[in-house]
Image (cartoon, rainbow, N blue to C red; front, side):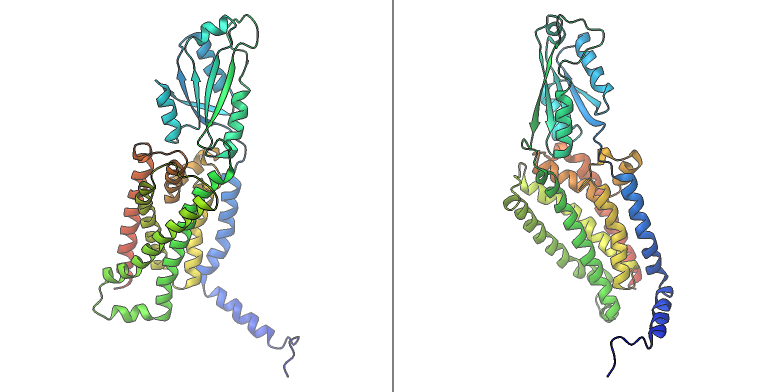
Length: 371
C-alpha cells in the first residue's frame, strides 16, 4: 500500500512541472507581468482624497462680490470652476450631463445684499450620484457660508450663507453609485471571458479544425459562435437591471429602452474583445490570463469603483481607451440622473466607434487565423 507521506518520485514530478512552466513562456510572462501591472495601477490610480471636483457657476450678479465669491471657490482645493453658464437650467444641465459635479447659483443683487448686510443665500446643487464625493462637496460648500470676500466691505459678518441641495440621490446611498457601474463591469467580464473560453476550448479539443473543413465559412463560423453569447449577454443585462431595481432599490430615472439600445454598443465591444483574446490564446489558461490583462484596467480606471476625476491626469487619459468608461457614464447618467441622448452623446459616439473598430479588427484576425 502506497503511503501518502512518501516523497518518492518528488524530484521527477518537480522537474517535470518546472520544465512545463519554462516551455510555456506566454503563461510565464503573464504570471510575472500581471502582479506588477496590478500594483502600478493600484498605486498610481487610486486616490481617496476628494479634490478638484468639477464645478459650474451661474452668476445672476456681476458685481465684485460675486466675482470675489468665485475666486474663493477657485482658491479652494476641493472645487475647480470649469464652466460658467447663462441660466439656472443650464447649470442643472451641466450636472445632468456629468460634466460638473457641483453647481453654484449666485443670486441677483448678491453684491448689493452683501454690502447691506442682508445675508443673501447662494444655492449649491450637488450631484449625489457618487455618495463619497457628494458628502465632501456638501460639507465643503457649506463651509463657504460667511467666508470673507476679498476687496468687499461688509457691515457685519457673516455676510452671506450657502444652501446646498443634493440632486438625484438625496440620501447619498452608496448603492446608488456602485450598483449601476457594477452592471457594466459584470456584463463585460462575463461576456469577454465566456466568448474567449468558448472559442479557445473548441481549438483545444480540435473541433474548430473539424468545422473548418466543412463548407462553413469563417464569417459564418464566427457569427454562429458569437451570436448565442450576444443573446445571453442581453438576457443577463435584463436580469442584472431587474436585480438592481428590486433587490438594491436603485430607482431608474431615465429611459430604459434608451439604456438597452446604448448598451448594445458596449456588448459589441465586449464580444469583440473576447474574440480578440481567443485569436491569440492557444489554451484556456492563456485565454483567462489575457482576459484579466484587459479587464483589470477596466475595473480600476473606468470609474466603476474609484472616481476617475480623483485620478492623476495620465490615468484619466488611459481610461478613455476603455469601453467600460463610457458604459459606466451612460448607466449612471440614465439610471441616476435621467440623462438623455443629448447629454450623453460624448460617451455614446466613442463607445460605438470603439465597439465597431474592435469588432472589425478582431473579426479580421479571427478570419486570418482560421483559414
